[in-house]
Length: 259
Length: 259
Image 1 (cartoon, rainbow over the protein chains, first blue to last red):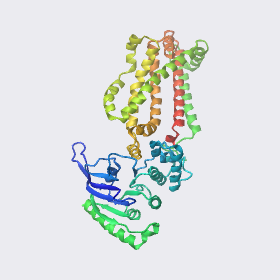
Image 2: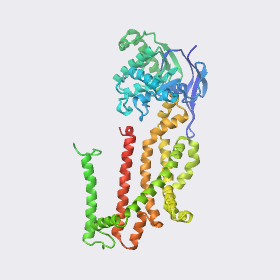
Image 3: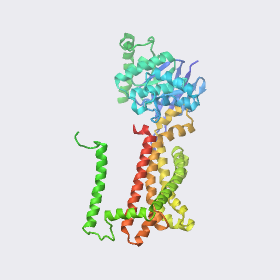
Image 4: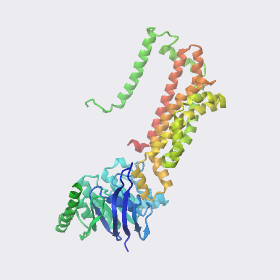
């Protein structure tokens, strides 16, 4: 049975000030298996982030339904962790306090919170930064803490909305490796939204390509590359072939959107 | 460094410049009185003012009046804050609460507290209750609106992040809205305390048997401009001192927002 089942889910935003309603997402269906790493690839504004927000429960679908382990999604919850593109660490909390935020909401004992936060601080390579405030960290470090904060809650599925979109290229590549390493060790079900083709292939077991706005699923492409994946895999022939194919798919949409 | 816009000055230079203007101001004042541009019964010289101030404190027990005025301001301000802070937070967090209170509070904010003094004297006499009521009226509505606006301005992405970490609505108010808005709320309190200072003197000028304002009215009857001016200077000094203390307290309590 699939862990996450998206069944004919669409979203239309009401028009503001008499304007026509905006169709952000045409009904899409998607099955995500346990421990799957799905990347959703699409142009800006194609509705891919909207789909993620619907799964997170931050928006309500206009049609269709979303099931997580067979139970319908109604509103946000700790079983779906999310990492946003913007830096959303709580600026008044230290790195450790941020990571423990969800655990504190659950009323977990302090000793256990400490143990879990220790594990994830090590996992994201930020030992020695436990008592730093977000403003004292670089963008990449902040996103690493945001990932740890979401994982510490041990969600059933991790949702990432272009988490490395604001980072420079070099940092982004390092972050991809770090996240993939964590995924290989922790085995989480992941839904990862991006507009970066290389990122989409490198991370994924399956790439879901979105059409231009209003978005729907254009095609799904499995990525049969073995794990662990070193960064050098990006120059492997299998990788470049996938990249060429996805570049064509996305270019088609970009041309149509520009027309 | 080349001088220019927004280039900060050193701490020493800042203090020096700040004191320099007080000296310039004092010199101008002294000159006006020394050349007899204004008769001394209308404008006392700086020296006369200092002497009168010394006499007020040593001979006429002025510290009792100052203490009483401070007590009145703080009393009325604390009562206003105790109600305005929770009400403002509720208005900022829940739109129906805002819709219920906001129009009235906005209307009441434009009613000058000093205009209520005659009415308040009729209602509760010229005792302490009347002073506290004037301060309360002067501070409460302003403070409520400022806090509601601060809380309503909470970053939505932080609220959404908290939701995806399993935070309840109550948890969000307690662990996101409150700590996030606290530094700005403290800043609003500091500003409104300043407003309280302007109202207390008005209240004491009109009907009181003690306090700085009362001393000023008494001195007017005696044409003692030196005492009036020293009273005004004392108000300024106490106001400045409370402002500096408040600012330092805020800096210490909310170190994260000054990083």
